[in-house]
Length: 497
Image 1 (cartoon, rainbow, N blue to C red):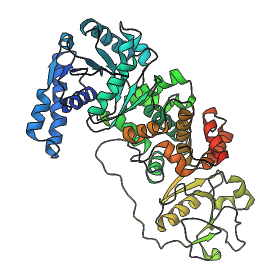
Image 2: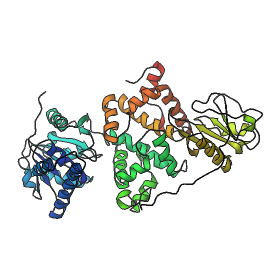
Image 3: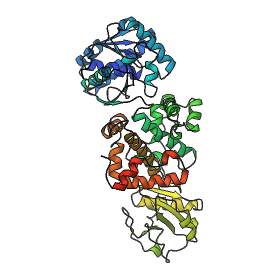
Image 4: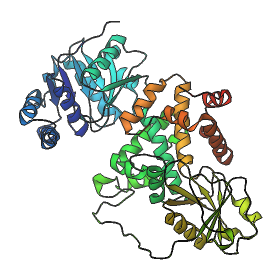
């Protein structure tokens, strides 16, 4: 199949994202026309370009001459007519369908009939944008990730109307610009945002229902989940209004309650608390350093009964401050009243706590990821607060990082991680994208250390099914039922790849 080629590219909207796209194209030695709505917005766009390339010069990644060459390739204008000889025009205005339609109507008027028009939408329907134009066969989605000069992934979105040559031409250009294209169909959120925001929204619901604190959820996903930042830090960085917009768009299509925005998120946006850009979101950004408590108490004595991978106890159970009981083991009779008992389990332990006759002393304990120091302490409705405090102190003395949550299936990490992996498995099973594309979307687009399909193979489909079954049994949430492809591969004891 032949593809169209592009020798001059237009970009409409020179905010942070649009200016970044213009810079990427200009770095690829192509002339660029950047369009803004008025002179003030145009100067802001010029500022974005100069600041971004200036940072590259300061870091030694670009010479002053190289910066000037890039900027000289970008023609800036407030006149749409300047786009008349562009082969490809990329729209990068705010995520409002009415605004995007206005832009494409204007592009229809000024651009050549054979020009390809692309939208950088992150969540809206490309098809809906396309059918409002006079050239629906030449409309393509091209979703860059912020910051565009740095992030390698670009999602190229085709529609049932788009000419394959136009889609292939955009993907080819993306490759020539040094990026990695992933071509997918027109589904709200595409790959990366559909997977990412389901997870972020679930984390917000977890906070809202009191399952765990903001800090413990963020810490758990960084230390135990291996992510570059926790969900609330990430949402504050993205902007809570952007998060809400993406979730609204995906939910409007999917009607999956995982994408129905948490009331807490909607409340924060209504209050104007949008994250870093407003100085406050889930966190306050006032420059103050959080206070840390210092302790000088003697290290607690820890005993281990049964198999507890990753923890070694040195104390006799009769003299221990904390007794960790492995799965399948029993609490020794010698354990004194008042000693904290931690049952190693990812499942609720309240019934086992009651059976001990000393439920106030009992917590659940889970180590969700081998090789990481995270220790999740599950507090039951009967746990004495001092018992949870003593368990946390003892685990910290062993070099572990304790976090606390309620006594629910999956604790924190598994309860957030496996539904996200399940979403990816559904995507794979439906044929929407292949394993390599799904993994590339999350590693290159979201900075994840590994992709979800690779993670499922590493953690095991059998474990995924077990955790998801437990989450579904507890909540009866349809989205938490294991994807058929997961159950099939778990039964066959085969990886997804």
